[in-house]
Length: 520
Image: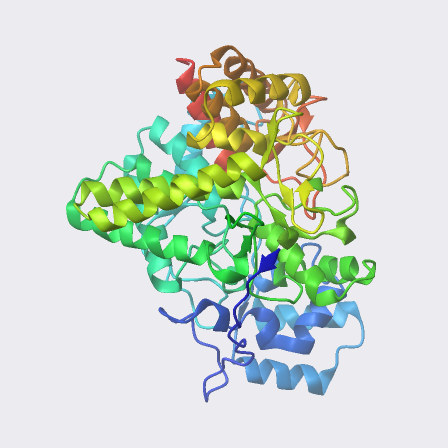
């Protein structure tokens, strides 16, 4: 099996002006060359993250320096803070450190109906256009957008599609249009949509939902549609670049998740260092696989673990995922359709052909006839990875799987993933947050929409009603909508690298979309 790679551009490790102050991220700067907080603050950054000066590693990378980087580093080297108290005091003196903005809750008296509560959250989670201050890790954002909430204080890629479903349900088309424009602008500036709008997210993306976001837009202006089509073609080139691609024995080509860097993630530095130390593998490869796992959105899951259970065995870049390749098939079909609308017959033929080849590859390499499921292909072992996961619904969701195979997937989902509170992410319990017993709003929607699309309404109704009951039960108890749910015990979910977050963009969006689907 041949894997093709291209040389990566070396990273820019300094990025300082003659004044010593790092400027805001420049429009048009190559994504792989943008300096992150780890690059800029070196020994200070490592000390803060490894000594866990803040409980959440994301706090420091979102902090804004009060003066030039060079001056802060010079003082740090001169003073050498001796203990954690001194180091924390040094950071607070030299950086504006973000706090968590509380999400409004119904904490006293009768609860608002959940639909009214969600409608009241949209203004709280909406942000105005961003022009970052000098030294900030934030990226400029041209128009208004909605954040997930909690520690997630910037624009995120795949989260936003599910948030938009709720905005459509609540007739906030203005925000849908502005967010589609924001993502189009990001592709034009960086060649892809970053994981989120921070410099430390620029080396990767997230599952490519942009074409589906564009499908929620009501814009019909040919000039706008032409610009968006060009952005989709650029995003497609990013996701199908050689380092992300594997050629299979029959010549078919499928893609895997990736990240351009081989260092610990800025926002989870200590956790990644500790994982690499226990892996017995080259640290650079572990870091890349952790980063690629973050790009998948399933950070983390048994899907990416070579032994199916231990994070230190993560090998995301060795896996050809059912969800990613289904989304790329959908993107190729969308590009072909968009080109047809605009009269570009050559592009339409090209991408229709790409979609046909990818569809055949998915059906050959990612389908298990014996188990009635779509799965993830392990390149080194030359076979599908074991276990049913909610990603099996993606070929139904995008419109690739129909007929007998869709029926078999539906039966598998009902037998192995359906739980009292909705759809399990996987059948394996590892302690990772994207495994059993957790269920996540986006995966509920993917399954419900895919089952609806293929005529399996009864099962779609069961998943939708059970998940809505989980959300409503927790809302009645706490006044919150949270990031994830334990769908077996029907309570807030656990696991992961950070505390459970509330807000929460995609839960709000999917809840409202499911309510509208049922006429509620």
